[in-house]
Every structure is written in structure tokens, then in C-alpha cells.
Image (cartoon, rainbow, N blue to C red; front, side, top):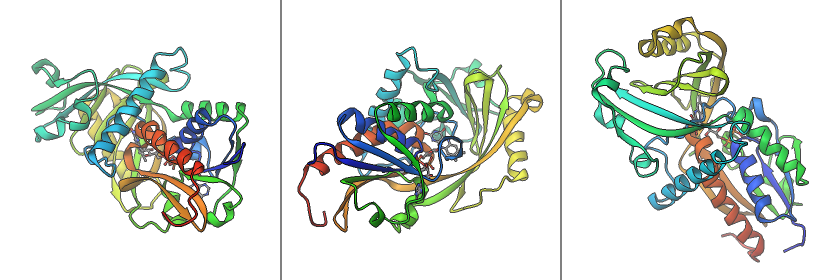
Length: 336
Ligand SMILES: Cc1cc2nc3c(=O)[nH]c(=O)nc-3n(C[C@H](O)[C@H](O)[C@H](O)COP(=O)(O)OP(=O)(O)OC[C@H]3O[C@@H](n4cnc5c(N)ncnc54)[C@H](O)[C@@H]3O)c2cc1C
């Protein structure tokens, strides 16, 4: 291995920036270049509410790996929460409720229950916080990460340590053959780069409103969620359009989201609307974290996090970085 290996990271979303920073933590002498055609505000990561609540469909290659990614991620965010920088980095603790009129099982989450300090059934009194007819509910303690703050914070650290962040589109891995190692953190862009048809967009649309009186995250039936954040900005959602590439705002989706959220909190009707945002979740089962030798170029993939990429970025990045360091030190010349 060279003294100062040249490393490229494709992607400047939550995955790319976390991988780049964690790689620098491991190999201080590496020359890191992040290459992305979109930064911060224009990424999918920036649209996410960023709550730590894995869907039970979130999957690594094995349950053991899935749980390790979640545990490492939780610990990473907890460590940040202990620092005075947490708020500036966009990380905040958050109490959450999930309610259902119909289905007890949606109020349970086997991936969360073992992980977070509190996951318990809602009390009779608390069930009244749900829309009329609510029968089932749980309360859990969790956290939330705002990429609007987290991405610039990580970007600044990467650059302060000598890393470069450049704007550009990578059309093929062959164009990066001068690098010793490439991390592919291109999100949905990996579909084209890797010709990966298992990577599918799941369209999402949210409304950002100003509602500083909302103190808890609330989940309901039919993908309804109300997630408070920093500065009194609350994310209202949502929709899931499988295999949809439509990035246009849909007024019917917005109306349906608002109606469902107002069933929970009627005074949201009067909240000032700050923005409507649409994004495509890069969905893949399982999430792809693995090394691949592509025409002699060492590549580590880290993409396909679906609706859970903000919360699971650290755990998957730790895994990708470990694979990358080993790959860099190895003498592999042929296909893995
Ligand atoms: C409405 C909505 C709500 C969400 N809510 C949550 C939530 O509450 N919690 C949670 O954890 N997750 C949530 N998510 C999911 C989360 O946003 C994604 O999983 C996450 O952002 C994926 O991060 P990423 O870095 O892989 O992708 P992105 O943020 O899309 O970044 C990809 C990067 O790769 C670059 N790129 C792609 N192709 C190329 C190329 N060929 N050349 C150069 N650069 C390239 C892009 O420019 C960009 O910089 C939500 C998503 C949506 C849409």
C-alpha cells in the first residue's frame, strides 16, 4: 500500500460524507476526494426527516449484520448527543409515539425494541393522543438527524483534514482508474453505475411546516407521520411510490398528507408551510455493503439504504470503511 493512498468517494449525501470522514479517522494520511454532482441541500438525504426508526423491512445480508449496523449507528449518534456540538450537527433526542386504529403489529418494532432505552405500550391516557378510534399504540425514545446541518458539518471536517470535495458526475468506474480505492456511495445513482436493477426508487413527498408546539414524533396508519425538528420545523408525511421516478410535487399527495396529519393535530391546518419536498428513496434488499474488483479497480459499495439511510449511515459506513482498509492492504488482483 502507498504511504498516501488516493481514495475517491462517489456521493456527498449522508452515506458518502460519513464514509469519507470515518475513513479519514482510520487512515489520516489518505488523500480523499469526494466526487458528487449534488451537494447538501440538493441531495435526498437533505429531504429526510432523519428519524431513527428502522422499518422492519430494513435488511442487511444477515440478521446479525443488520443488527450490528443498527447498534453501531445508534452508538455513533449517542456519542454525538453527549457532545456540546450535537445541536449544531443536527442531532437531537426525540420521544415518539406510534398509533394504529387497526393493527397492533405496526406498533411493535423488533429492530428497535432491543436497541432503544424505552419501548413500551402506550397508556390509556396516551392512546387519546391518536386520531379518534385509536386502539393500539407504543411510545419509544429515539433521536433525529437533520442533514441540513450534518452534511455541511461533516464536509467541513473532511476539508479541514485535507480532503477535497469536487463537483462532477462519474459515468463509469473506469474513469476513476487512477485511484487506489473507490467508495461507491451514489445512492440511487448506483443503479446506472453498477447496472443494478435490484436498486429501485421509492418516491416520497413531505411538507415542512413551522409548528414549534409539536414536541413528539407521531406515527399513524397509512404512512402518516409528524416529526418535529430543530427551529420548530416539523416534517409531515408521507407517501411511498414504489418504482416511481417522479420528482414533481403532487398537490393531491400534499392534500392527503395534510388531511391525515390534521386528524392527529387539527391545529396543523394553521401552520405556516415552509416547503414541499419530493425525494426518491434508494431501496435495495439487502442494502449493498461489499467490495468488488472492477477491471482491477478496488471498489467498496455502500448504497441502497431505502427509507433508512440517515439513521443507518454510521453503521454501514463503519462496515464499508473496514472493508475498504482491508481491501487497500490486500494484493487482490483478480475478481473477488
Ligand atoms: C421523504 C423521505 C423521507 C425520509 N425519511 C427518512 C428518515 O426519517 N430517516 C432515515 O434514516 N432516512 C429517511 N429517508 C431516506 C434517506 O433520505 C436515504 O436513505 C438517504 O438519504 C440515502 O443517502 P445516500 O447518501 O445514499 O443518497 P443521496 O442523499 O441521494 O446522495 C447520493 C449522492 O451521490 C451523488 N451521485 C449519484 N450518482 C452520481 C454519479 N454518477 N456521479 C457523481 N455523483 C453521484 C449525488 O449527487 C449525491 O451527492 C427519507 C427519504 C425520503 C425521500
